[in-house]
Image (cartoon, rainbow, N blue to C red):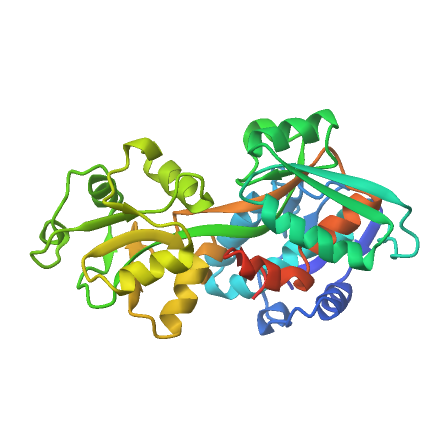
Amino acid sequence: MFWQAVRRGDHRVPVAELRRFMRANAIPEPAELQQDMPRCILIADGEPNMARALGADGVLAKPFTNEEMLAAVCRLYRDEGGTMNKLIKWQAALMLLLSALVMSNGVRAQSSAQLPASRLLLTGSTTMAPLMVEIGRRFQTLHPRIQIEVQMGGSGRGISDARQGKADIGMVSRALGERERDLTGMPIARDGVAIIVHKDNPVSALSDRQLLDIYSGKIANWRQVGGRDAPLHMLAGPPEGASSELFSHYLQLPYEQIKAQGRVAANAERIAAVAADPRAIIWVSVGEAERKALDGVPIKLLAVGGVAAGSKTVRNGNYPISRPLTLVTRGTPTGATRAFIEFCVSSQVTDLVLAFDFVPYLD
């Protein structure tokens, strides 16, 4: 079995405990959990973001961060004849298991009554801050003795404050880099940006070069990208928006250099603008666009870099214009900090993640 065990220091967590954990967190148990998979033991050694994959031959691989480990596990599974799609359903279970079972060297989470009165300070990403404010409010209804304070300042501040101990938790709207292995990161959701056009537009995909040429003003007619002979109506989101930040970063095109004939603020307004204009193009939240398209609004999400835009491709990391939203701590979280992070990766906040147009790891 793939889940022979998860070892925490001197403790071992068998498959049965994984199943109990999934049931307790309302995570449907996929049939794949009971099928033969690559024989692999996950070893965490007390560090939630430093797990190791141990093959059946007993050779210990290099340390992995959570996301690197998932990628390695996916490769192992694929090499054994499995399919990547089978992993998507229980990818979140792995994240949650590492968080809840490994985080504190085998010490169980404290109950609400056991958590002492305290104040948690979160600083960093402006993209994540509004979501964390709402999650904090919900958490406080369950843990009234814990006060949550959220301050913005960018992902850089989140890294710096967490590392220096100025904040209990840093908010970072990207994956941790090689130079940040001293920090513990837990992705709680993903942010994705879709490029949308009118449903009747024959264009179904754009390359990175075509997108760059459109928004730098080099392409002005749909015919140049395989569409009808009609002028492009380039629309843009506001400069302060998270989707604009991600889109600009992806194209490596500073926002002030983006050529647009109009700027539209909210996601709903952008979608309405494209639905009313067969020549329009704009970027928008993947989650919002996907829901509206399913509801019958006449828009279409374009594939980018050969990958379809959608919640599934954002969740599994294949869609290129996406990034993880990560909570970061200095060392292994304990007490109220750990309880809050566990809450943030639970199904209790999925509705809030969706309300802010992010993509949850949980289906």
